[in-house]
Image (cartoon, rainbow, N blue to C red; front, top):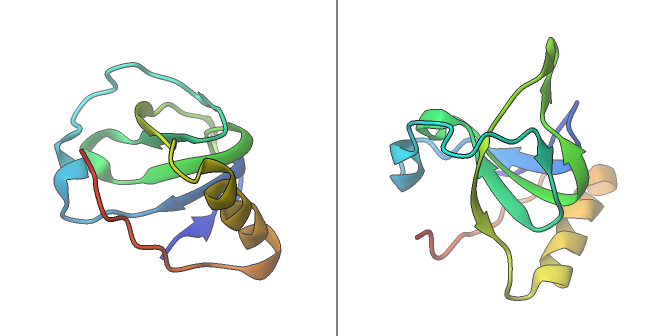
Length: 100
């Protein structure tokens, strides 16, 4: 399930659990600003975020860093519009068919 981020701005997140994303062990290219259409991850795949608008990664104690892992290209505008609607409509279930 994907949820709207509380402190980050125009972004949503999910916890990938035991998946290939857990192999991202380092901040290969640390960023805190997340641009629309970018997918970023915390080390060891503990959290993955999709930005649908301008966002800055934050926790309740301040700014933190992630590493970019992908950029949405196919059906980008429609996908980002669904993510933006989550702000008002709540959590969504989305299936990701391909990673890597």
